[in-house]
Image (cartoon, rainbow, N blue to C red; front, side, top):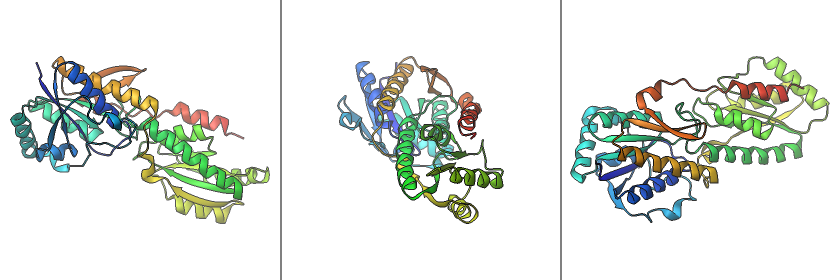
Length: 322
């Protein structure tokens, strides 16, 4: 039976990660486990950067964004020789299992460690919501609320000046923040990899009709890596009746206090991961399906196709048809 469990956060930070850490620590201690945090993600495994913690560790950080145990990217972890150093360090400390909070790349590292004798459970920590094995990832709900608040504020100033806003939303090729945000903000347009801008002339004609009808602001939301929002704003200004401005929300979307639902979901995931390790289950990742926790093999999870949420685009197009 596992006695010592480590926890690390890897890849991009996400609000709610601290909640997952707290949930795991408290559940582990309740089950008489010795709990350790690993600082700086997989890098901390290589540098032997471990700390034994008690139930009060980072308890006051539940409301904080980011990750108090830090995170880092370590591409070299793909190499078996590097992972061997990590395994040796863990074994010297007596840590028999790990909870890894991060995205796809972090999951693969967790699976490889499991195959080398360190049972690992992955938790989906990313604002992008691009882990197909979970309906929602740690960080997505908070990031979405941040997007909505930011776009609402941008609408205020666009309305004051009768302007168009072209706003770039994060997602790293996953358009969930953009489409969910567009519906929540009642944006006029949303362009993503699944719903690209294919006919500029039709768009510009529609925009001019809206301007003539008395519409005071026009909001266009664009998923990052799709197109140049600055260039599109300039083209709108030169080709339509609208004066346009562009905004790249950027890393503001990663920070901030986790929402209440974010905290609840993260704590649930962290505690569930400990329960799995207590049963000797490793090499798996945790996710929500219809608000129920489940776990599946990491390799299987990484093969799952991304949910394109086409029904949301249909909804957006319907309510913005005229």
